[in-house]
Length: 314
Image (tube, rainbow, N blue to C red; front, side):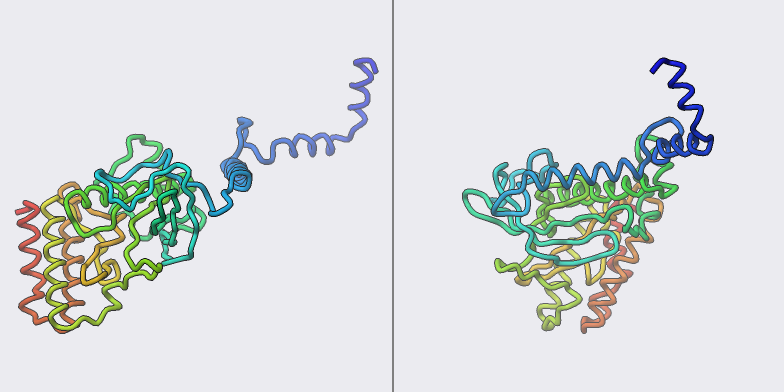
């Protein structure tokens, strides 16, 4: 056909059909012609699914994610497996929460295997960071665009918050582990997933939360002393747990272990630090008091004086 034949053929198409064709081409894109946020997310999911199906090991659910991840402090415990040819096997869910779920993962290498807790922060569509506003004070992103997105709670901003919580928890655990604080060893961080030391038995039975325990009087006193020592160590380092309770403490073989630290608070930079620290102290003091420790032992005011002095906030 000649050029004018093309034009005349197109002229025969009603205006409504022309507009329909143009609309179909642009519905999923913004006015600049770029992919929308939803379309980018869909493409990313398709790509991830294709890669995971094409490269799945026979004896596990995925290959080790050690390569490319942030790694925990050195010297590492002997049980940590760093082989790139190792595989990870999902063994089930340990805990579900509003911000993250925790799964039991077995990493298998040529020299053996180890159990880890995989803490995975939820996607932007399901996440409910109901406490983030107060904790994020004192933390600042470098780019004003990122700060605006986080403040507006856009999908992009919620993803930033999710990764910031993961980064904050991994950094806090690494820092506290090196100080000798009773926290799980942080094996690695990849995106919003943390792989942590599993606190429990070799058969995959997790250690109980303090809230689930009914310790004898002598054990109760010992656990309180361990807790005071841990809180004092954190205060000397200038931080507080930020969400401490009997549900964020585990007891394994008589040893108290502090968990769930994404909201760790800087006692100097955060203007609400003393208020948050006081709440931590009140929560644990009330629990130990309800289990039978005398008031003079679990005096929240006395413990606050000790911690504020250790942090140099006087």
